[in-house]
View 1 (cartoon, helix red, strand yellow):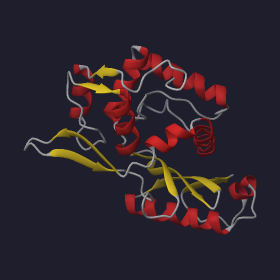
View 2 (cartoon, rainbow, N blue to C red):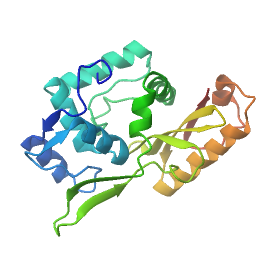
View 3 (tube, rainbow, N blue to C red):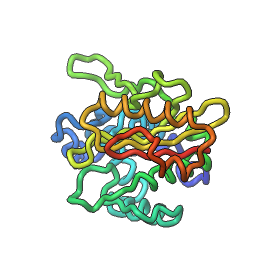
View 4 (tube, one colour):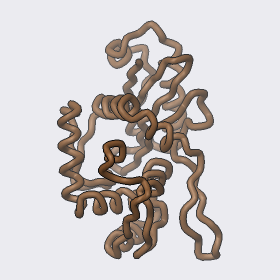
Length: 237
């Protein structure tokens, strides 16, 4: 939408009371600490969404763009069909557990990441490698600074995206990408028991992928040489 001129990064969306109440009540969940009535730019909302997994940012963007989260979720599902995500459907803008409505396969996540990186390289470079994000003030008046949730950013050479996730149903998950010597890998791990296990499995899968340069994408998804995680997949280009 931004590249088509349908949405400006500078456009301000107002945080609704309902959105603030929803996410302030869910203590311990990932947010960018938006306040009721606050006006926030699309640019900052995208940074909060991508860098620190801001569930509140996802809700504000959804309502700001389409008037309601339900309308935005329809947009998400329509786009998923359009790009060929045949094994996935979405029930919320944030990915918050919704009784099993949201279902996304590892293969579809790799497809989504590949399309994002290929079709929107400038946006990918702008938003997915930010090491820290500052927004809001703590009760003692100090700025709130959060580190990027990406477990391999700054730890694995070439890592530049994409996004973590965690629910009680799916465990600790990560859709990641790295580029070395002109070769990009995209990988998914899911169902891990902890943040530490997620990081270690992601690093191991990336190391395995870059060490197996001759293998095709299909082979990387099929063969038993792939590191054993509860769920993992890799693609190369």
